Amino acid sequence: MITQDQAKDLGARLETLVTHLHLEDKRIQILNEEEKTAAPGFWDDPKKAEVTLKKLRQLKYWVEGFETAQAQFNELELSLEFFKEGGVSEAEVVAAHKKVETTIEELEFKNMLSGEEDKLSAVLQITAGAGGTESCDWAQMLMRMYVMWAEKSGMTVTELNLQQGDVAGIKTVTIQIDGDYGFGYLKGENGVHRLNKEKAVQLLKSQLYEMEIEARNAARAEIEAGKKKIEWGSQIRNYVMHPYKLVKDVRTAHETSNVDGVMN
Image 1 (cartoon, rainbow, N blue to C red):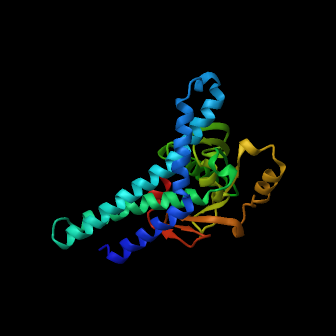
Image 2 (tube, one colour):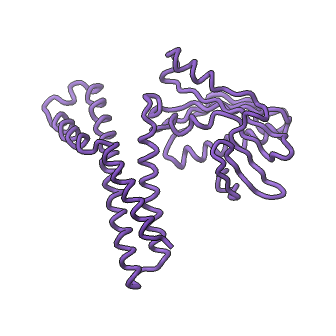
Image 3 (cartoon, rainbow, N blue to C red):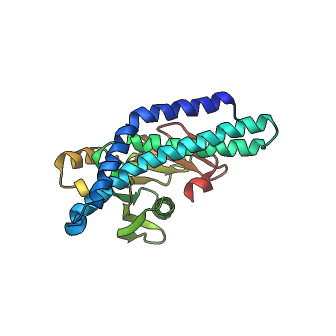
């Protein structure tokens, strides 16, 4: 059951977001940018107009996102009150809590992605490691996982390069993922994904780099430095599918038995 303390915790996180997001400043900026769009001759320079509209969309994302979270939080508080009186079920309270928590987490996460490159698209390279056909098959499964994630997130996927395995699966693939915060979401995936830790037969090297700033030597050097060899000490996530099911993130120690949910 969701407690009052859990609701208060979400309320405190909302208050923190007000400060971190500088919402009042953003509201003023929105008014200023909207005035520009209403000015005569706004579309005389289409490129400049598009820059203004993009800035306006970004500003509105934060303000409207916070307002959505605030409205959901208010609904949660009402649900808790109605639950005490028997007006709503426990499941409805849990659902209301989950809804606002998800919205807040998304705002918090994107607020952390403050780097210039985080908002841009990403290029993901998957390379099968040692293990022959099994490794190639695992690489193809991971490609499918990332493609499905991108499409569910409203992003578009373009295949840039693909080398099929000798028997099945793929030896290597490079895909471009276009969408807001594509690079920010995926930059933490740079590392090895290992299937069935006990057998240690299927490996993956995931290399991420961001195309828009590829020409910048400093950024490229940083990404290149983040590449890791396909070996035991560099994996970021382990996948066990038999005799039991488990996915464990080595970096955070978070684990789940819902392998299908991760892969699909």
